[in-house]
Length: 325
Image 1: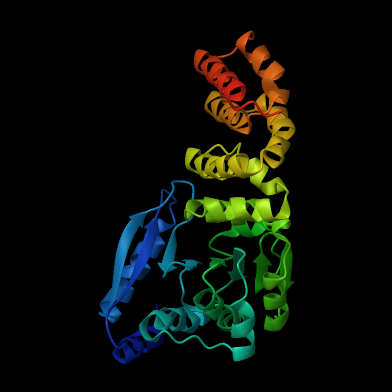
Image 2: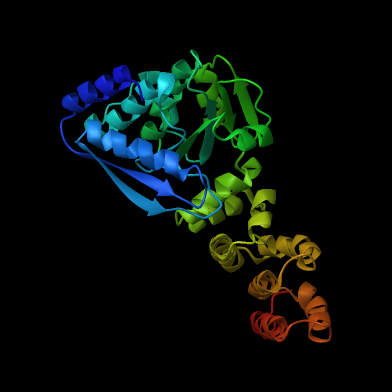
């Protein structure tokens, strides 16, 4: 941190109206120490900032979380410092710098949007894009923004095929490199087909307790979203649980729609671990559909773990009780 950056933080702190709390998400990633050091310096220079540490998932990258919607997977120095301070200031004064026309358009959005922005401390153009999109999560609760330093997290930049900065990704489907037309971004956010939402977007909704909303979208479209089917077989139990809750609601309200899950889940059944097998079988039982019964009987007579067989037995009993065709 340079002397100029320290002085800027001190001045910014003096302009805050009161204390502000943000979070440091610490993980097993070795780069967590860099984030801890920055946060200690930030609190030293800006006494009105309170930073609490929270343990993130082991394999996740460390981050500085601002509110519920913005995560900095970057040490915000150099050209990144000023937009970072502005993002925190929104928590202080509630003001986000965004045109009314765009604000009104965003208020109509009810779909989750995951924005991932790659920047670097030396890039002279990144602050422009940062200032454009940082107000969006403060304007619409369904928008999440993750900011990545492409040098610090070079492996993620490589995975996302980042060749220059700034580069913005939306739901792993849309990409902007260089200058950004905010109106175009907002137009795409608000007019996406929910059936094409990424697994990450749906997973975010499930983690936030919005399983019912996920179910409602599929019931409205009368279609099970492809990305959702993958979440039913996710290796992490909390993700599967959220997806299962959504499936339970679909099965209760539209058994024919729920039956669409049978073939894709059966196709994946033999490629997952036993705990996932048990949850897949549970979902089969929830559908109440006789179509799956012969396959469940093959599990009872096959070389499977006792708990998997017990789940198949319970599912068959549930199907018999529900009696759906």
